[in-house]
Amino acid sequence: MQPIIITQSRKRWLIYLLGAGGFAATGILLLLNGESGIIPWITIVFFGGCALMFLWQFLDNRPRITISELGIEDRFLKIGVIQWADIAAVKLWRQQGNAFLGLELYDEQKYVGRLSPLMQRMVVLNEKLGFPGLSLSLAGTDAIPEQVEALLVQELQVRFPDRAV
Image (cartoon, rainbow, N blue to C red; front, side, top):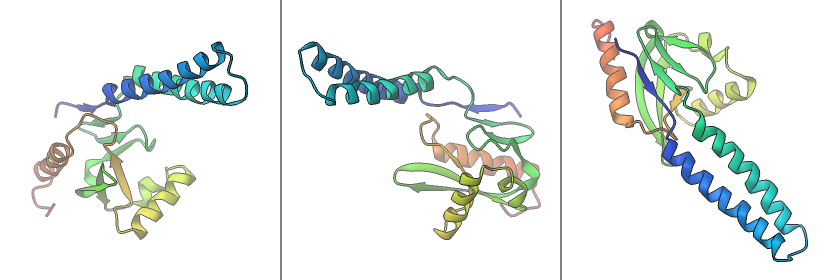
């Protein structure tokens, strides 16, 4: 299998960068025009900080999700590769316009135990809301969620034809 790499949407981060930069520039213009008070400084500090973060995200071309022979690795989860043999099913779901690929795992604790404490609480919350506990977020990528889901389901069927996926 040729590795499939899903990266962040550079267009999205560029738009955010331009917006935050525009607000920071507005704060600078307010100061240059003699505006006194805290508002220009708050605008410059807050939106300037946002602009720096957005610039970092725009320049970051590391893979976000990698699908390979070994399995699936989501850089945001920081749990390493989720092996194909551990994946029972994949299901696309959406929440507030964002696409997620829910992973039904045979032994969820094998991977959930590697998550940060905050992310572990999010897994519990997801399950209480009726969503898969461990999910890959496709928000902020240029990936077409339905195509990624179909690819993962197909890969599971090829690897494990005797399983009902």
